[in-house]
Length: 159
Image (cartoon, rainbow, N blue to C red):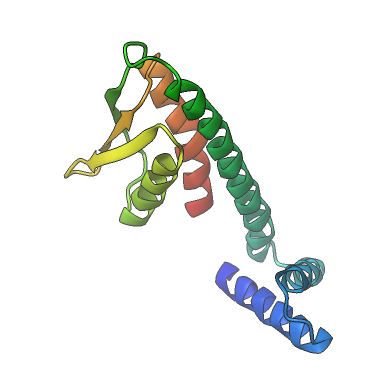
């Protein structure tokens, strides 16, 4: 049912753009927000209400990822001024709770987007991902950070 509500939201946003006659990103987003609100008001079934919690969570997760990328960029910039002897590159084996190829692919892309990290490989049984880190201070803390910051919210959105 979530897919049909999303499709209805898109169609209503497109109708809004056609009715106003202004094809801009801002107008489309405004129409999407208005149609989201209208659908929220007229939807009564509890099982259909999941859509109205997923979209805000998704937007918050995307904003969080952007913030993490910005922070990691500044951290990488700072670390690039270190002499080579101070850097501590490492390859970390991170266990996965993600099971499907889509979940693993999205998580891998998110990890690789943050500067200073790079996904090297995923194990054949899809239970572990190997991450190259430019400057590793604490292995356990790094694994915990990946699991709590990136994987857990992603799996809550995907499942």
